[in-house]
Image (cartoon, rainbow, N blue to C red; front, side):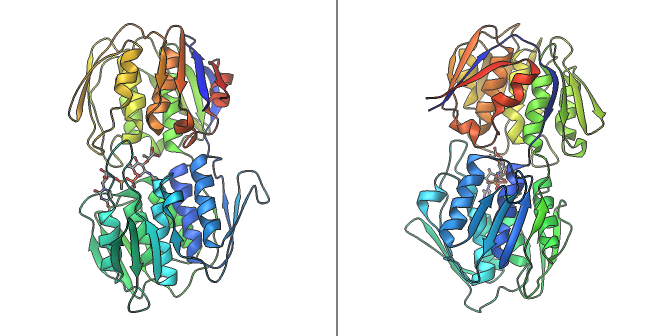
Length: 422
Ligand code: EPZ
């Protein structure tokens, strides 16, 4: 397993490009299942999770080609009939594979999809996905770790459905299924993440009739059939946010090219509160880390609140603040695994349930640490950049799921960072 070694203490200067959004690309690639033909999804990041989903579609009988006609374009040829199943062997490595469920049920009236199971950050049930599909007329059985779904009346039927809680992929699954249902569907208490909106834009490009995506109420008029996708994925707001935090570290001055200000409002507000300067520049955002951060309280929320996917990265900045900050993780039940690793670097953090009290220290000291999940790994890279001395991060496969060769993006900013092949 590869390791990443960081010699910290060097402020980051320069500009860095943001790749396409993993969490938009995944549901949009899955949406290809809704229509026969040749699809093109552009600005797709070259990530392990995207490759896994490509293997899953190939398993079903689709042809998937990277760099189809242009760099970072994915070509997907969907046949008239596929094997509507997602086996455990593939789903266990990437739980977001569950987003194939809605398209399979909607287009072929049946699906056999492995339950994703939990992951490091929480149980991550999919009850809302299943309730929404049931409301559309699907019959769902759970057997031997699989979801068996089918439509006894042939086609799904439009309905009015309210989610019990905001779920990003739950909203995406049900919205995709409703796109081919008979009649009108109104979904309430939807997730408002930009990735949901980007999926809806891709679906509308396929001929779907959808309004309100990006708000908590989405209206869908089902259609008989859809045409192949040709869509360019939005920039990854979490990768962009990770680089913004990197630039906010003491002495940093970084332009994050491709960052969309409207997607970063909650994070930018907190970066300014700790004393960083953030301003819009042509094509992105510039952040300047002005000395030691000030402490600030953070509470993760569904969009447009502070993103849970940025909680670990923000914690690193607050580890260096001249005071105590309170971080409350309200979205996932176990998303503080980066804490014990940060403590190895000298951070002073006390966790009590959903709350982490971060008492700022003047500096962090490099040490060997272990990645545990995707965003925790990104936080450890940031901590290594800030720490004095050498930090070795093991199990970077977690990082590669959501960041395209992060070391190649950070090195031009002056980071002394390298990947050690196992
Ligand atoms: C998406 O996961 C993202 N993944 C996650 O990003 C992100 O952390 C999360 O949304 C929250 O923003 C993708 O989009 C591929 P949820 P998702 O359903 O859809 C509970 C990353 O780092 N819930 O919005 O799985 C659930 O347990 C990843 O890129 C139910 O109870 O998250 C959680 O507590 C990590 N029942 C909360 O809702 C359900 O049926 C939010 O989960 C569904 C969810």
